[in-house]
Amino acid sequence: MSYATVLATIKAALTMRPAGQKVLVSAHEGAEIAILDYIESKSPTTRTAHGTTTANVNFDVTWNIAFSNTNYDYSINGVDSSGNPVEIVLVSKSSTKLVVKTLIAATITAMANPY
Image (cartoon, rainbow, N blue to C red; front, side, top):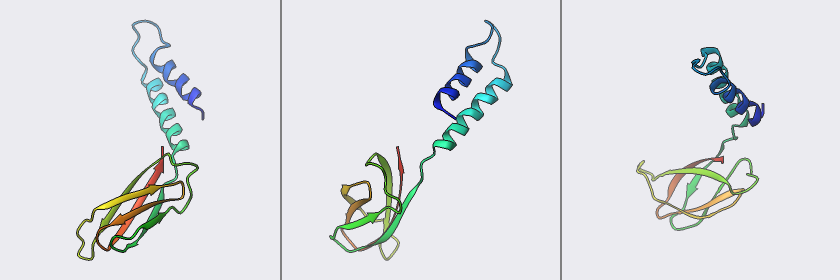
């Protein structure tokens, strides 16, 4: 399914009808299904990583699958040995990893998705 196909389906449902006629439920449902199918077919693969950091030492959060570039969003969470959240500082970002630093030893987990 292409973007053009989805756009044509949406246009047909919303604008290509006689003046004064309401959007047909079946056309609206068809457009919604087309949007969802398109999103599902283009859904990025989530990358995950985890590990244990040492205080004030750079730690590589290496992705299980490299990205084609650095256009991705990420989320990192970390906790200390008592389960308290820790501050995580981003040092650098590449297609294969993030380099982070924590001020205390911590266990971190990370997830990322391409734009």
